[in-house]
Length: 456
Image 1 (cartoon, rainbow, N blue to C red):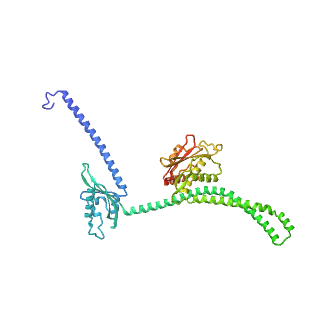
Image 2: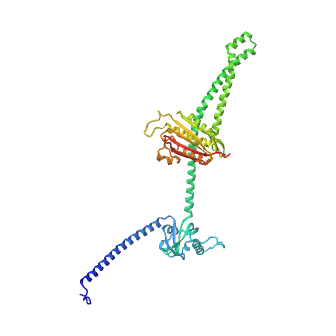
Image 3: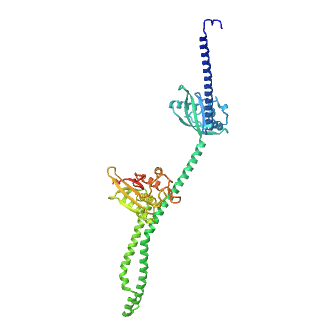
């Protein structure tokens, strides 16, 4: 037993030994925790080093006096010096001096760097500036830098961080972006042209069908007039030749001159009527072809609706039954041609949906296509709302948020560009209105077109 330990009972020694065991166990636990923290610290350090190495932008961390404390691989590659060579060196050594000193500017790199860091200290936020660095070939390279102050854990400023990109890369990226933008604009114009041609194709199909009747009528009348003119010419030849009255009377009966004279007024009237009908159709086509003009004017919305219904019906092989509830005439301000394009797209979509197959694959042959179209004027808000509902299968719920997205279409390949509703949506927005899609409780899709009334 140790000297001086007399009088200490065995339980006291056991307590001491137990405390020693606890202290030892705590030391072991602390050592394990310290090893785990070191592993985490090493992992974080490797992660930070990997980020610095993979950065395409150059990075410099400097002390308060402008000496380099940290760099990354992009900077070392740019200036052609290793990280170990740069640490501790003044950042001003990397800067190129001015080729033509300006007495109103701080020309020395160190002076300019000091002025910039003081500006950052005064602002306490990022400062964007262009600096000239000397690259590995000794050439001056403009670099677009962002400089921010760096603080320690206590909030004390300990230096600055410079992150930048050589202007050559920015200019190259800008050129590539500009080229991509131009290519996108060309593609957009091509797609818009394709959709316009699709709309024009539907219109031309209707026009061709509509023109067929009056033109056929005019042609038939002209052929009859041509035959009549030949008979009248032969009869007049006999008159001018001084034929006897009996011979003239016989010729008049043989050539049916009297029935011809009675028939001529109706033939001329029918020909004029057919020509006028053709002129009216062409005038309607001219209204549509003027849809790219930007001037606004008062537009009879119900007349636009009727024209859209008329042309879509004429261009379609299916018979569309339309139920109208339009009420009194409504006038809006805008482009009649553009609004007609919107309504033709909506009517055509309704017709396509109503003639398509049901979701379970059943054809719609026993359900003839129908369209319900109505208008409601909100006098308090000076707006009109047009609703178009079809008897098709409706729009799947997952497709509703996307129906106005460019290129989105549920039609088979080759039967749509996916731009009709997107372009219609943009046209309606340009007119200060709104266009939305939903499903009707009784079935079918509903498109709601809202437009402001003409202020006049």
